[in-house]
Length: 205
Image 1 (spheres, rainbow, N blue to C red):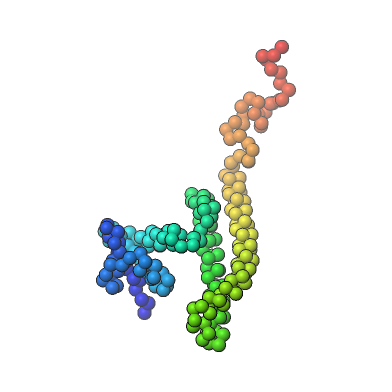
Image 2 (image 1 turned 90 degrees about the vertical axis):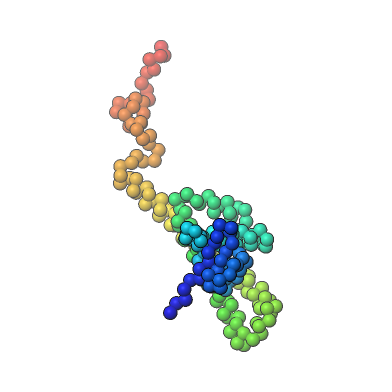
């Protein structure tokens, strides 16, 4: 039987109440739950609205402010530009799949390291850190290749999206790019029967 999702309530005073332990907890305690891969949901105690994403974003903000940041300013700016963009949904999926790929590669290397001599020599955190420092360039190389492939895939998806949009507009009878909607038929405009560049100007003699 699957365990029920741990429910955390957020009260108007911004305090978080863990219904499993019947006690108030801090944002740091929620971070521990994340690190321990424990499923939980944060809801507004009054309205019942799901606040899990909001709490996770708060944790990320604290980490970005206090520690060594993951997101650079240009990267955050690029992410912001995708909000409201036609490619927003695709971009979210693209980032999620790349993050999952990175985690899969990382887990693979960790499993390989722990399997050496049953992992006994990696019981020491310092030795494990040294092992991972050696593997990091390899992981970076693998990720570079994967990201390059993903970038090409994303460009292809974008081109396909643009082609589908162009085809849709064409099927609905919209004007081709470069034409002037609503202007055809007016004197001197392209597409007007009998229009001529050499027509004399009545104001000139």
